[in-house]
Image (cartoon, rainbow, N blue to C red; front, side, top):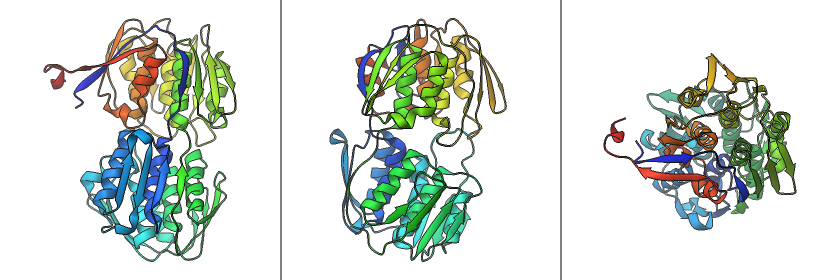
Amino acid sequence: MDSYKLLITGGIPLTGETYVSGGKNTSVAVIPAALLSDEPCTIENLPDIEDVRVLTDILRLLGAQVDYQPAARRMIVDPRTLSSCKVSYRQSQRMRASYYLLGALLGRCGEAEVGYPGGCSIGARPVDQHLKAFRAMGAEVEERGAKITAKGKMRGAQVFFDRITVGGTINAMLAAAKAEGSTILYNAAREPHVVDLANFLNSMGCRVRGAGTDTIRIVGAKRLHGSTYTVIPDQIETGTLMIAAAATRGDVVIRGCIPAHMDALTAKLLEMGVSVGDMDDAIRVRTARGHRAVNIKTQEYPGFPTDLQQPMSALLTRANGDSVVIETIFEARFKHLMEMQRMGAHVRILEQTALIEGVPELYGAPVTATDLRAGAALVVAGLMANGTTEIYEPGYIERGYEHIEEKLRALGANIRREPLDPMEMRR
């Protein structure tokens, strides 16, 4: 349990300018990819978040030399001293993206042993498509107890994913980067962080083509050289800040983002009556009136992101009218709405669908974050609510948002930490 709680006194419009940190989802793929290099790599614009710190610990335990400079948002990884290809269950449970170490270690060493991944409890996250890709490239894969082992010389292959899988696409790219011959991934994911990983691999001398489409071709390289690479801005942080600005009926300029990555969210905010304008690397969100209810269905990119469903559905609890939110990616992503009922939200949940009846007001109440994006949604709710909202288990938020409290305070939010008293520690 976290030793503190977040207190938010809502009802204050957010105003001013803020910036977007480097992408969490990109960073947790690019850092393992650095293990494939035969020389040191420098990764820049890394967010100072818990998942990056966890990967730093794991890479050091594997024997790699890692110079992580959080203040500079920079990491230098020298994989030449790698001495192990095993990641314990205890370490892998600290984050979901630990499974990318399977593809990276398999690609570099020809073998890997990694405990099952942990991370947020938002539903099943099967790795069957990951393992299918490894087997197609020649690996012998075994699932036993709490770990996955894979071994074999990687050879180019054609991989047909049965369903779109971001994690499976990234893991297959990592395993194929130094494989003998060419690999073709069909029905591949198209997310921006898939494209960013491809760009990083290319910067090291791999040949990846088609990232951003549903067919990706990778020509493996015997040797990959070092690279200095800057990760893209965080798409989900951008969206969360956009939603927070709309929720508080504020006026916020978000700099250092990629507006084209936000098209699905921008379209929905415009449909709600929010003013959204974009410049080269900035987005301005303004709202001066009530929001209209809208319907949302999460889909793979370029559809509406599942990671923004939770903050967005929090916003919809105060929209004028009834909204329908259909979650197609993860089955346990409405827990935040059940917490928000304590704040006065009117919600019915029917399997993968949330029926949201907009209410005039939300009220501050004690709520608990159950995962990363649920925590962000409760922050949005607290910013909208009358009175003070207490958010317990806020550590989830630190997994994916860099200094979000400071950024919100700079925009005028009343948000602060407070230590838990002994009675609260027993909750």
